[in-house]
Every structure is written in structure tokens, then in C-alpha cells.
Length: 89
Image (cartoon, rainbow, N blue to C red):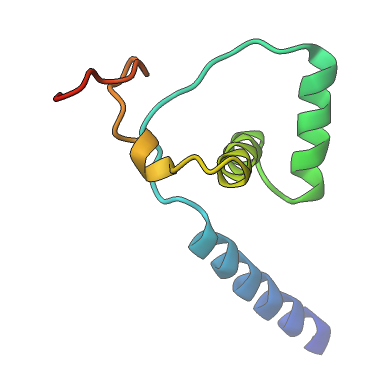
């Protein structure tokens, strides 16, 4: 009984920690085609980090942006089609 109680407490703490780190809302859908072997590698990477595939892609993009000095906040200022805005817009 004692073990089960501790397990439940750990699961509760763990789930709350993950909820704090995850984004609360998604604002757009991204659909693309990739090689099946690359998708399998992505799935494996996501499983190793206990993430969904969508969250793993998000983390990979954020890491790339951070390494390459791309300001994600500025990128969110792009129009919905992703094209850069002309000067003065």
C-alpha cells in the first residue's frame, strides 16, 4: 500500500511538471511530408524524451532558432502565409 501511494504522488508531481512546461494553446497547423525513415527517427527521439511527435518538432525548431539567433517572438510577427512583410507594414 505504501508503495502505491508514493507512486501516485510521483505521478501527480511528474504530470504537473510536464503541464507547466507545455504550451497551453496551439495556434496553427503544420502539415508536411517526410521520408518514412526520418519520421521513425523523429518518433524514436520523441519517445526517448516522453514527448509527442508534434512537441518534439516544436522543441527541435526552437533549439535550431536559439542556436542560429532567430528571435521566435519576431518570427511570430510574420503574416499568416509566412512571407516577410514589406518595409513600413
